[in-house]
Amino acid sequence: MKEDQTAKEGGSATKKIVQIAVTLAALVLALALPVLSWFISGEQLLAYAPVTSPEALYIGAGHRDIVKGTFEDIRYLYFNGISANEAYSDYVFCVYGTAISGFNLQLAFTTNNQFEYEIYQAVESTEPSPGAVRYVTHEETPAVYYYSIDSETNGGNPLNGDFLNDIEVDGKVLGDPTSRLHGAAYGEYTYVNPFAEALYWQSDVEDPIPGDSTTDFVVYFILRVKTNGKKSNDRETDILCISAKSVTIVE
View 1: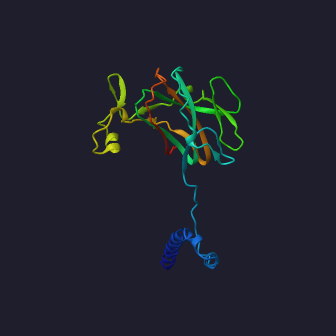
View 2: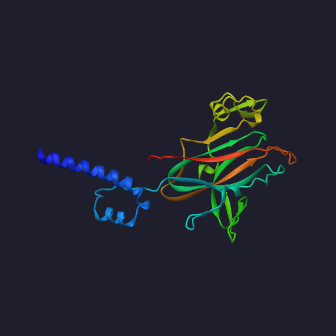
View 3: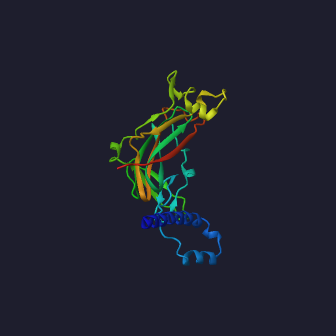
């Protein structure tokens, strides 16, 4: 009985020390060296738990170099090349991060222009190919990369997904002013232009895009903007937001 009690006390003490050690570890940089030396020489850390890198998820434009740790800022995702003379215009962006097993993409855009958007998973190359998106990095010594639709992912088709708040009004797809998303965005405000009501689209939550739960990763995408014959002299502004949401993929 005494041995059991000793074991319980020992287990309790270990648990307390671990908790204290974790608490002190956050403060250790602010403490003087002699205090840190005492902490180590006192051999107070009887147990520890492995700590993984915190999750990190980012969106960039174009090339991401994992080895160098460089990336192209999302502000370099320019849309000034959209032409009404073409059926569509393609742009490259990437999602990169650490310790993310999977993620979903989301788009939010106003309908001032009746553009249509599609997202394809892409592959990067240093060699040009027909239809590839050309991207020039913004490094001190610029490099050129080319991005093509990945034919092996989803059969080369756009990512599957659904709108969360779409309605059709006079043949145009608009944001539903009665949806919960309207209330979250505008609250009690009632003077909302119907074309300023954002549409929200999300890639298929049942089929998240794989990341890497242990190391850095990068996944490239092509955003296709279909102009639907929009006249080039029409200066209306369309706001587009891209976001990525991490999810856990269970094997």
